[in-house]
Image (cartoon, rainbow, N blue to C red; front, side, top):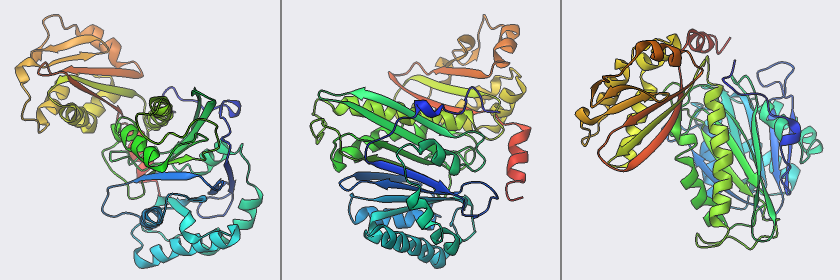
Length: 409
């Protein structure tokens, strides 16, 4: 069961002028479920992409990066689940190129106007004929209102679809921002085994879209971890159809720059946290906050060490206040500025470590009560600077092992 996360209400997911979506059943892996999706962009739309840093980049990731280099004006995104098309060599690359070429012919655009995405089992080839055979159905099914349908179609081990919308007010017009994502396991920066697609009708240049993209990812999709594993297929896409009447946002000094950036960040953060709340086998949603460090990177590294520690995560699953494991994780961080005799740590506001040792007023009975809660806030005060960073993770349960042991069955 996801932690404090429900299936989005269809009425809460807003259409984005200039974007149409569709999903169909292609029989790629699953029976009787939609597993192939198309996101169609009106002419004049701009796109920015960020991708996995795993050296075994999947074929569709390689194709996307090549196509984005050919220009930022893209017309369609094609997404399949059931096969990651990763570790498939030149044949996998050729297959990804073929489906782009075939779809481009159907849409009467160029092959480099298509961006392909795959998620599912690594070391499996995509069934090209099954995918191509559904292009007519996909195109005929396109509609502005199908965001949630696509969010469901791209799921793998997710238990609920992930979608979110917001409206922001610019100087001239209300702007819509809507996003969907998938991800539940193999979640670790950079990004995760995740796909995320966020679109807006805002009038914005590609260079500024790309700048905002890089700024918002660090504290959203690059600040989450379920299990410490980074996938081969991570992809995070921003799309702007430029159909709104706001004045073109073309540099960071423009009046609406911060407004649009905050809107994108709101959507990206919600989707990133949704992935953690739906983490494989998760029973707890854990926010790790590290404050008063020398650098933001130092703070983030300590937060990551805590989030990746199986001993910390299993203690959280067991609701066992074996909190010395958190101190051990902090001490394992490769941070030269760390002064262990200054470190304070709090569990949901309850102090349990002060100046690197057990707090004088630590109450294990109260700690037991806090550990049983489904939402945990761990705050680490380094007391050596003024920087801070936050990170989100899950506990590690029996079900995580079961889900991954049975993933291919």
